[in-house]
Amino acid sequence: MRSVLWFALWAGVTAGVVAVSAMSVLAVGQPPAVVPKTEPAPSAVKSTPAAEFTLTKLLKTPVSGDFTDVPLGEILKEFAHQVEEKADDLLMWAYGTEFPFARKVSFAVNNQPLEVALDELLKKIGGGLGYVVVSKEGDKYDGWVRLTTTGERGHEAPPASAEDEMTAADRLALAKKLVDGGKLTSARPLLELIIRKYPTTKAAVQAKQLLEKIETDK
Image 1 (cartoon, rainbow, N blue to C red):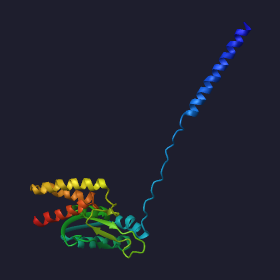
Image 2 (image 1 turned 45 degrees about the vertical axis):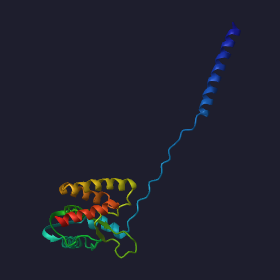
Image 3 (image 1 turned 90 degrees about the vertical axis):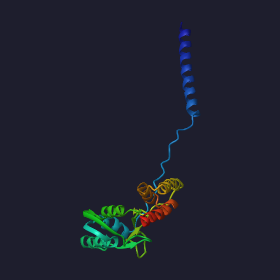
Image 4 (image 1 turned 90 degrees about the horizontal axis):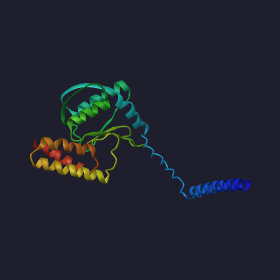
């Protein structure tokens, strides 16, 4: 009887050791868990002190005005004057190539931050107008606001990707079909979208030219 008990005990221990050994072999044989590496986020390009001041203070200064058939450049001068009085610092404009500063427009705004007023004003005129706060240490225009025809809102637009080029080209092809079909009302907002959303693409350049032709022929 004692022999049977000892055998049973020996068998149980042996089975336990085998089971543990098997689990150990399995654990060792499995590949280690892969811990995904967290790549550090690329640091944002820092603005120069002058550009940062323009972005965080001057463009936040509220402006007001009620303009009827006034050149765009005159409206911008008035806004700069109001900012100077309230912020006690100069806001300087610089006009990019082909920016329509002489175009007359009717526009009203009441005590809104300059960046909001600019956004509404430029959208109203259309054609993908925008602005960039110059941020270049040592540049005489550092901190100035450069008015553009490529739809930016404060910062330089990044280079166009291949996907953006393709999408913009497809939309431009559709806009051209609408123009050829005499559907200018539908083509105009599509062209403005291309200029605003894909400002650095080849299609945006063509869209701008086509939009200007539509406006000239109107």
